[in-house]
Length: 484
Image (tube, rainbow, N blue to C red):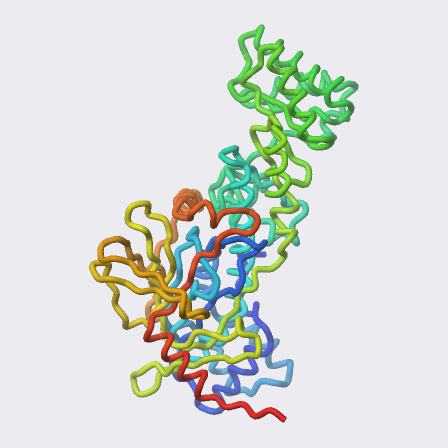
């Protein structure tokens, strides 16, 4: 489970490479970048999440005697290497974009600067943590955007791919904008609202639906939300809910929070009919909650149909990001430090999107001054300094004739990568999940509406500084290929 020591949560080849470096006395300081290549679900952005768990992993990183005994039993690792692992810990630097931030393809969302043995080893765990939570936070942000101001509850635990995916997925979903979760353990661990009412089994366990509703209302006096689709939504469920609401009203006990939940059927049709029935009975403040295999596309469609739904419970398709089940983040070597200087390194590929950006880098986010909307992100070398009182010429690194000129003082610059660990010591305090959620909602407001479209969104430009572009070009040109 997530509280366990995760040191051995790694791919086997990380350990074999570590031993190879150890045997060859290779332990130079290197730079590794974590980045992704394509936005999930065909979207225009992603949401950064999982940093707090990366911090926990790094802080608890150590090999136990049991770990070493297991590695010894594999007959692959020499005793001198196992002795080295006995006192292994992370001593390098980590920079990251804060959780809840809007992020874009090909830019480093986390940067590791450390001796190569240490930097190599932590690759797998960092990727599995970051990839999962970025994926679910991004999916949640899309669902919340489609809900257009209505509360969205995360309901996916029973369909998650295992307990940890359910627990951390709920955390990420709240970061992405959900108001709470049905997952009680996640709510406890991360101090987020636990939400939910009752299931069909509650109704079926009583002799009749009306009695079930009355008994529920007797116990939960502050929030009476009744599931109305167990037998017949419009002929039984809604009328019986109205009876209970009227009884509570007559006795002066109707809570401010009261309403119905729909979990099946034609949600647009049923919600409109139910709304008319509730309003006609005088319960205009009653909420209508909907669940039933929802995602951003179905919610968007239901909104377009005039569905009278106030609250959304989204489960399977959110917690699994069903239409895009993986984030695709990678961890690539970008530089090696020799004689006190970082030497840029590049990975080539016949697939252009897999060619990496070399060097020790940082990211400037560029906002339009008047609107504080994101104009572009600019990846520069770490020693480059930019100020907004000077003109700025941006160009597309893949189509260099596409240029944007920004007048002095017409834009705002913000460095995105912040220090997390320095020389192995934690220098960053993670906010609470609800604080990250609030920050994330503000971050999404910095996007133009065109970049938030669910289909065919505008892509935010991620540009390279001229100096970084020239280094990349020189490295590409330094390789010669011979074809038959």
